[in-house]
Length: 154
Length: 154
Image (cartoon, rainbow over all chains, first blue to last red):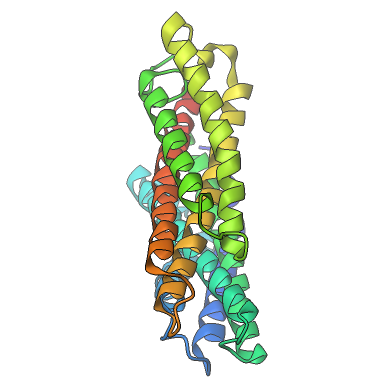
């Protein structure tokens, strides 16, 4: 079995998972602390998705860390787990992209309206949150592609 | 070489491509005919992306139709073309999803605002356009996955 850098159980994968956890937590914090997000559907959607992405990435980061430390890759436990991880990553990355795009477009609209709905400080918080969600999406897509690449080699 | 239904050069693929062309044309028409789209960034983005998806899907529909008629699959012409088609499909499906999500969230916001920015007839046109873009995205994702499945068999 080949070793694909970035696939589950490698240190590159651990770095990707930690990045996802950090960026999605940052997105959640920028959105939910001190700014009103519950009056806009898109912002509520982003908060929900980030609440799913954080535990998923954190659990897989723990598994990768364990794999790297004891040098016993989870890949050896078979194809079913890898397929489950790939499906989870793909679905979550699609949802993260959807949430990030919705948030970015709504924040843009709120800022450009004739009578702006949000003070510029609040609007920049929304934009920062969308940026973090985009970064989390790109790492999530990378994880999913690396694992997909490993699939035919098992 | 196995025949994967839905991969390039089969009649299932022809059906998928025709579906993409029809849905993305419908999305473009609902958005651009008779409603003001140019004042919102998200709507302009959707129109741009649909302008890319329509020629791409139509060209590949022609190639599939030719392949089915003369029974000479394009797959035999090698891996490079298949990889190019997969990358194009993936990038366009990501962009279509982004455009559809932005349009849907902005249309939702415009409808729910205290002083609605659009009459309900115009708003429903925006929503229909977003729905068609989502349908086009799902078919585009299916095409991309079927072709990706074929890749290790070449």
